[in-house]
Image (cartoon, rainbow, N blue to C red):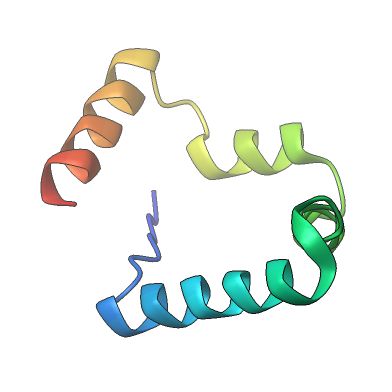
Length: 73
């Protein structure tokens, strides 16, 4: 299984926060949230994407992998 995880850097977190603050300042919290939801909405079949990603991996293995990622974060 090929696992790729995007871990944001300190710089990227700062830029995301700055962008969010600008959106909220210009649009207000409601419209800024709607904007983010619209651009973050995926395309395709999420269930199939998850099945393709994890394959036949057991729930305990998935849980252990997630706990390892959290521990490194």
